[in-house]
Length: 347
Image (cartoon, rainbow, N blue to C red):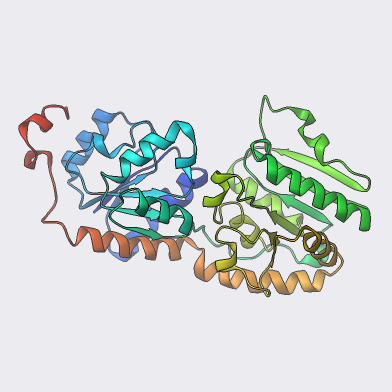
C-alpha cells in the first residue's frame, strides 16, 4: 500500500503527479490513497497509524505539513518537479528533507542531481505524465494562425517573456495577422503586462485562469505552442514538460528552447527545439504557412507523447520506485514500533 501526501488540491502538478498516478497504480497491484491537502497533521498521523502503508509519497515542501521530520520512522519517497531549492522560502526545507527520505522521484535530471548532491539516498527521473485524450484535436487545416505561450503566472518569467516578445515581433513583421495567446490572467494582475508583447501585425490575448479541462480545450484552435526556457534563471533549469503536455495532447506543434528535458524528448520530427531566436522566428513562420507539415509533426509528437509522457508511463516508473523501496523494508511500519518518546507527539 502507498499513501500520497499532495502539495494541494487536484489541479496542476498535484493532479498530474499525485492524484492521477495514485489511481493509475491500482491496476498495477498497488492499493493507494491520497490524503486531502486540508487534512491536519493529527489527521494525517491517525490515518497513517491505522493504514500502516508500506510507503508514503510526499509531494515536495510547498505544503507546510510536507516535512519528513514530522513523520519519524515513516518510509518516504519524495516527489518534486520544480527547482524549489532555488526559492528562498523553500531552500531550507528542501535541504532538510533530503536527509529524511528513502528515495526521490524528480521531474528532471537537474533536480535529481541536486537531490543526490544534497543527501538523498537515490533520485530517479520520472517525467510528468498526463491522461491522453482519444483524439489530438481539430485538423491543422482548420486552425487559425494562433501561437500560444501557456505559462502559469507569465509575469513572473521575465526573461522568457522578453524572449517571446522579441520572437513574436519578428514573426508578425514577416507574417502580419498572427495572434499571440497568453494564459493564466488572475485578479490583481497588471493589465499592462500584455503591452510588452504588442507589435505591428500582432494581436495579443491574455486568457483568464480556468479549470484544467477548459485549459486543454482551449488549444483546439492553436497552431504553435511556445516553450521558452532561460537557464540564466536558476529556477527554470529544473523545468521539464508541465506546460508542453497540453500542447502535445491537443496536437499543437511545439517550438521550444534547447534546455531542460526538451532535448531528451523532442527530435527534428516531433518539434522545433533550438536556442537560436532567428530559428524560432523562421520556424514559426514556416509552420504557420504549412498546415500539412504541422499536421505531420503533431502526429509524430503525439505518438511519442502517448508512449513516454502519459499517466501510464509515469505510473509504471513510480511502481518500479515504490517496489524497490518497499521491498527493502522489514515490514509495514506503525507508530507502535517507534520509541515511546516519539509516539507521544503523534496524537
